[in-house]
Image 1: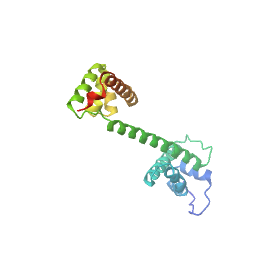
Image 2: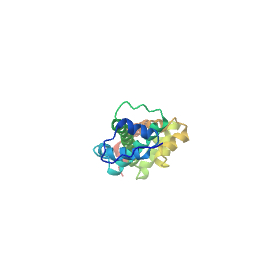
Image 3: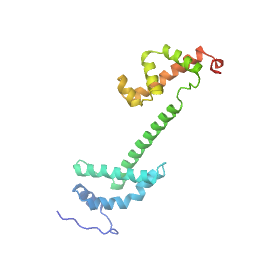
Image 4: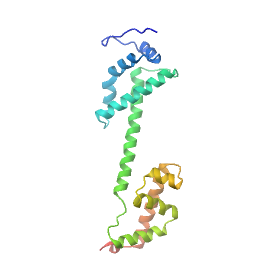
Length: 190
């Protein structure tokens, strides 16, 4: 199959370019890459992203576009740029959500149980004993064994990491409540 060669400055016919990509013409994809690079990377950069993240997102979006076009199942009802832009938006949104979740986990880790004195340690241990077995295990695995939410979910048979996070949050609240109701601030003074 012969393909017409586009010059970089030439006007690209959308439908023809799309058909060439569907047929596996990598040169047509390269033209799309160059033509829309600045527009697509600007989306990420103006939404808290770096140049490297922008490039990665754009390349991932083009791979998705290429695979869908090559599968023969993609019916393009918009401009190629609009379609790729929406893929970039979705990928970047997912990446931002992932970063947000990671930062929340790091904050949780930083707020580990404060036990820098033997007296505090005894108080926390007594309160832990009053919790149910599952809560005790979740908190022990997380704060003492420093297991990830994924490891805790697997070890305790939770459906997923979100279930483990929710359980840890609720158990930590129960523990905090036990400590507050049974002990005064005076008990924590050295």
